[in-house]
Length: 79
Image (cartoon, rainbow, N blue to C red; front, top):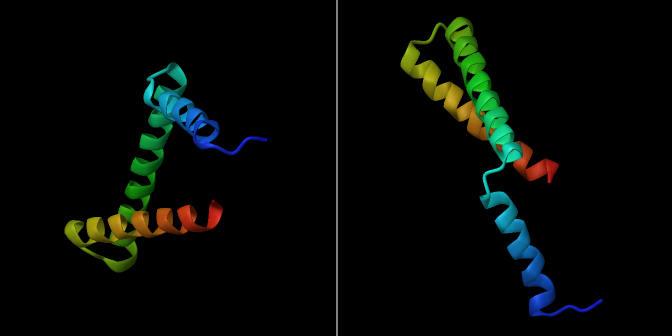
């Protein structure tokens, strides 16, 4: 197997082009991502309001922090 500049760059370019093009599959993927993030935020927002009796502002800050920390843990440990 050849390890050179072109052997590495050509697959990287093809990978980048694949994710830049808007196909039906990328549209569906981004739609699912959007639904997931909105649902996660909404559920944590409601949970913070009910469990802590927090105001809307505090619950929104908590839900944003929970979403960011949960996604960070997933990004670190699942890869």
